[in-house]
Length: 254
Length: 267
Image (cartoon, rainbow over all chains, first blue to last red; front, side, top):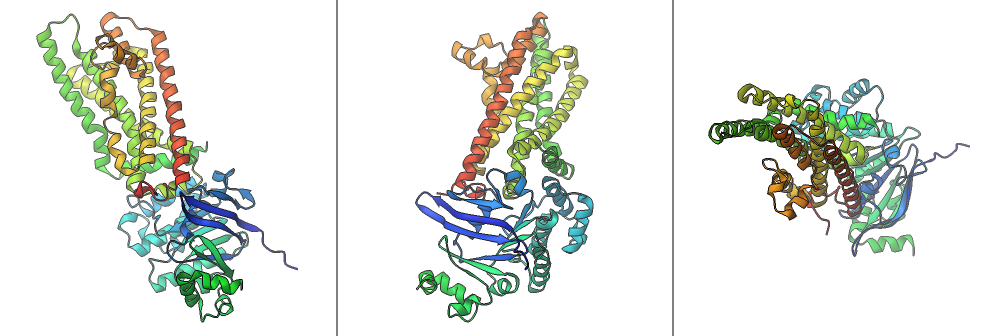
């Protein structure tokens, strides 16, 4: 019998409230090693809030987060050294070159053999010719690739990707997906991925979590979940959840 | 503290300085203009006042030291603003970097840029106006130490305010040295001030430096006890500023302001 991979990320009873507004409400889930989990939901559903809490830049109102079975609050620096992220809203500073930025973040994340590793990610993300170009003059797609290079520079055990291919053309997006997928399939690596591209989610994710209005509504295999809820595909299910979250919830718990 | 991570913050600033003449220029331009302005004012005063002493070390020397304090404070603040201006907070704080490491990186950047500015000021003041602060001998060390520590404290305090209230509060950082200048007796003895202002003066470490400078130049004496008190006070302010920054950091993490920094508030 093959032993199930241990949890890389575990979130329990997570809640974030701003006064009377609850952005995330009692969310629990886990990501195992070798697993890529899609965090889906309409705009404002709470996806980025959850990612920010996992990244330690937002304190949960309730609940806890464990990375590799250790409490994030008590071991923040240690656990964030084993975590990395890429997001469309967190590009690397535009006033430094790609190589300089990777050097700085490599030092912050304690990357070993840094120069060699920078060379590897520059090759991996087709950035060698832009290595000495300032990030601010790169196209949005090139900046996205630079952000992904930074995310994988430290060989993280937990990889958080917030719409990582949003600025990429279809061809580049496919290449990046395959690279991230190959990395995320490694045992001991867990990946949490948000995207509004349901085709991408179906292709990459082993499991999806549907959020609506801060609550976790559904979870399951992206290939079988639509049919289980009487929908043709994941996009149809997404639209149903975005428009009428209660109807989908009721189907799950009649 | 992980020194490698603090070095990363320092190195980022060095990369920025190395690649930008305008950043290098701002380290020198105001300080050197001040030296030129006050150098000529001092020369004029010496020619018309017929005083028993030279105004040079009392005025121009004080201007060099005051500018050093300002450079240290603004060196910390500008290094911090680089992360504000480039919207880099999420990358910085969603990483293993600790607050102490981040601040150590900012402070070490400021120490280097302020030291460069100090050397430039001393060279200009010496070459054009014949002022030699080195004639103060070993006393220069506690004078600079007090100003360095207090400048660091002011810099951290200012960045804590901007971290809490957002980029629009940037204006707050620049006039801090000017607000303090009347109290710390840069150009006149503290005894000149009304009693309530004197009470404030003795709570500010630079007062001990400028009083000490006048004591040495005009009367050939200094109080080691007062200088030690100045150092102790400056260290206390560094500790208080660090505590304030940590408190503000915890508040912005709780309120979600790091992730939405440009919004300034989440309400």
